[in-house]
Length: 101
Image 1 (cartoon, rainbow, N blue to C red):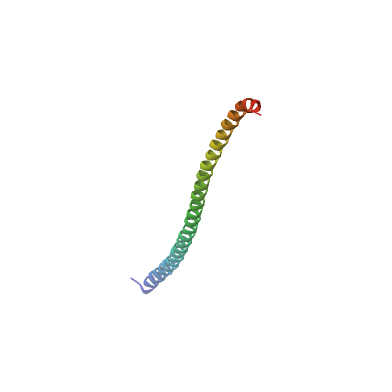
Image 2 (tube, rainbow, N blue to C red):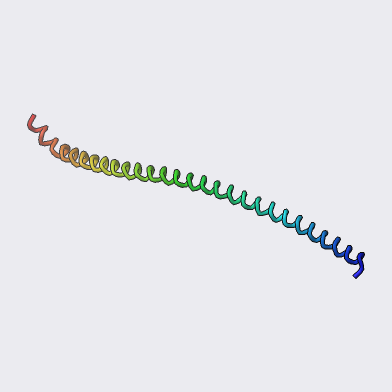
């Protein structure tokens, strides 16, 4: 093999090594970007999970208040019905009471 042929191979090898180094650097940068983006995504998902927990707490409070309001409303309805029945009894008794005057 001649020296010039060896020199050409060396230059080719150097060019390939340089290309490999550049490609490796690009891959490393891409991996770092993906890693950082994954970390950011995990942080954002954690924030979303916290908001969901807050909303769940609020919904639980609302459900409790609505249940309490329903119980109170049912009690009011019962009281109104009893008052109506008492009023009807009084109205029926009114003519009798008027005669005693």
